[in-house]
Amino acid sequence: MDSRRYETGLEVLRQVDGKGGEAMVESLRDIAPDFARYLVEFPFGDIYARPGLDLKNREIATVAALTALGNAGPQLRVHIAAALHVGCTREEIVEVIMQMAVYAGFPAALNGLFAARDVFGEHTAPRK
Image 1 (cartoon, rainbow, N blue to C red):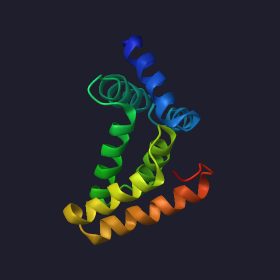
Image 2: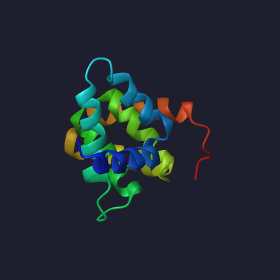
Image 3: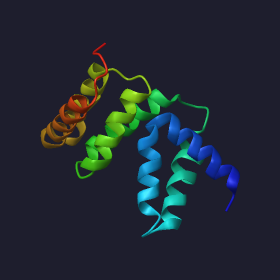
């Protein structure tokens, strides 16, 4: 294992998800420890750590993609929370999800909006 990739990924994961990301990685260790490592190294150590986009824009893209997929509700909720954590406003998140109605359809956008409502209810961050 390239420990530099893992350490970089873990640091970026902490920036994006706070302690929630680490808890998710730990929850995989008993069933798929290699997958837990891959999850830190590739998305966060290799992709999120790249200089081309800041974390806020990466989370906007991720929320859009997960909304459009329409079948990744738990992951969408995690990334809506991460988007809030890296500085996205509730309004920005809602707009991104609404935009997906054009490309992924109303059902996907509705599911995304309901996920956002749930996440917003769990977070006390002020509306901006």
